[in-house]
Amino acid sequence: MDKIASNEKIEKLIQYYKNRGLLIVGLNDSQGVNTTSTFFKKGLLEYLALALTSEELTPQVINAFSLTMNKTEHIDYFLKSNLSLEEIKLSQIYSAVSALEKVMTDIGLPKFLGKIGNAYRLIYTPKKGDENIKISTSLKLAQEPVMIYSSGVNDLMREVGANPFGIKADYKARDKKPNYYYTLEKTKDHFSLEKVIDAIERNYDRILGINSNTDIYTLGAYIPKSLQSEEMNIFRDLVIAYNEKLLNLCKQYGITFIDTEEVGKKYNNSENNFHISTAGHNALANYILGYMYQNKIISKNKSNHRIGTYRILNKGAEGVIESTLFDYEQSFRKAMELSGYPKERELAIADEYKRETEIFKKVLTKEKKKIR
Image (cartoon, rainbow, N blue to C red):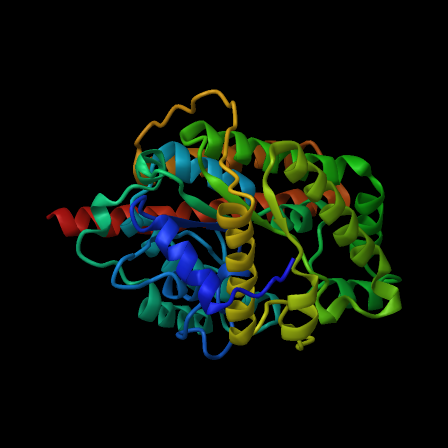
C-alpha cells in the first residue's frame, strides 16, 4: 500500500466525511507532542486536521497527547470522567511544566527552570467554548470518529524501570548501581509486557464501548537513535516484542496498526530526544491519511465491534484526582512492603501519581477561579 496520501486521495476523504462530519481524537502519549525547539509549530493532529480541512469539511479535534498524563490508565480516567477540552488543554500545560521540572531535577539543575514549560500555553490555551466540548460525549455522538491511539510505551518504561534517556547511564553505572540489572530482569519477565498489552486492550474496550463505530489507528513504537548501539539490545528487543504483541492485538480487534519504524529512523536523529522532528509529525500524518484512504475509500471498511457499553461518570477533573490519589495510595502501600531498589522504584512510581494529582488540582483550581 502506498503510505503517502496524494491530494486526490485526500479530496476523496473530504468527500467521504463532508456529510458525516469528522471528529479526530488523539490519545495520549508524547509521540503526538511536538517536543522540538519549534514545538509551537504544528504537531501530528494539526497536520492531519489541516490536510482534511476545506470549504466543505472542518474536522473537530480533541488532542489529549501529553508529556505527563501519557499512560493507559489516564485514557480510562479521561473517558470515565468525560473531561472537557478546556480541562485537557489546562492539564497539557501543567503536564509540560511538571515533566520539565522533573527533567531538571533529574539532571541536577534547579527545578524552577521547568517553568519554561509554560511556553506550551502558546498551543494549549483554552478557547471560548472548550468547556462545553466533552471527550466521551463527543465520541459518543460522532458518526465515524477517528482515534489516533498512541499509548503503552510509557507504561512499558515504568514497568521495566528505564527509558531511552536513562538506560545508557544505567548501563555505564551497572557495576555501582542496581538500576540496569533491575531493568534487565524486568524485560525478561514476560508479565511486564503482558500487563501493558492488557491495559491497551482495556482502553480499546472502553473506546469502542462509547462508540463502536470508532476507527482506531494505533501507532507502533519505533526504536530511537539512542538505542541503536549493541549494549542497548535488551531495550531494543523489548520494543520489537511490544510491537509484535500490539500488532496481534490490533488484528484481533480489527484495528489499524501503523508501523512507525521508517518515520522514526528518518526523523529521530537526536541522541538526547527520542521524539520525532516537526517534519516527522507531518510525515506521520501523511501515513495515517494513506491508511484512512485505504480503509474508507478502497476497502470501505466500517467498524462493527461488539463491545459492552461503557459507563461515563462525568466527574471531570475531580474524577481524575480521585483516580490518581487512589493510585498513589496503592503504590505507596506496596512500596512499604518492599525493600532495596524495588522499594525505591515503587516510591518513584508513587511520586508520579502524586505529580499527576497535583496537575489536576491545578486544573480544578483554574476552573473554580473562572466560575467566580
